[in-house]
Image 1 (cartoon, rainbow, N blue to C red):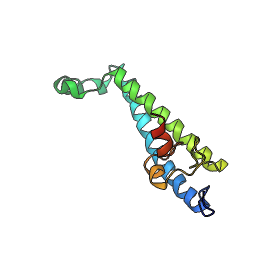
Image 2 (image 1 turned 30 degrees about the vertical axis):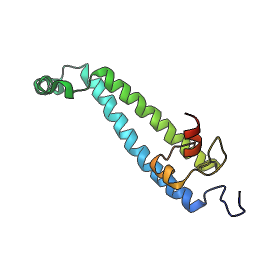
Image 3 (image 1 turned 45 degrees about the vertical axis):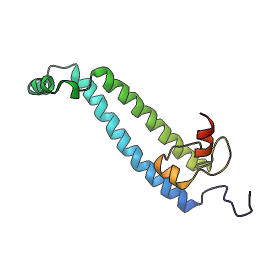
Amino acid sequence: MNAEEKIRYNKEELQEFKDLILKKLEKAQKDYELYKSLLSHEDTNDIMDTSPTFKVLEEGANVLSKEEIGKIAQRQLKFISHLQAALMRIETGTYGVCRETGKLISKERLKAVPHATLSMDAKMNRK
């Protein structure tokens, strides 16, 4: 390791990642709420269940089953928890450090997957 190789991201970089994570977290939470509301409306016979029913029957395969929506909601909840954990790593100063190699995860990877805990090298070596 050369003397100039960074071992941590600076405050400005961390703030940039934090802003990105907060935006993704907000969208993920909205999506999760939408999935939850879809699940809760499927069991009712209110006005939401009358006219769309015929359209749902016409669309057939394009409509997600309750089970599929539930699985998507669970994945969304897991994604939310990963994003929240990434925010905690920012607060504790360990964000962006590969948990296997101890080296910085590239900015490009973190921008694409802001909750990543492994560098691409470490991830590829796991396969």
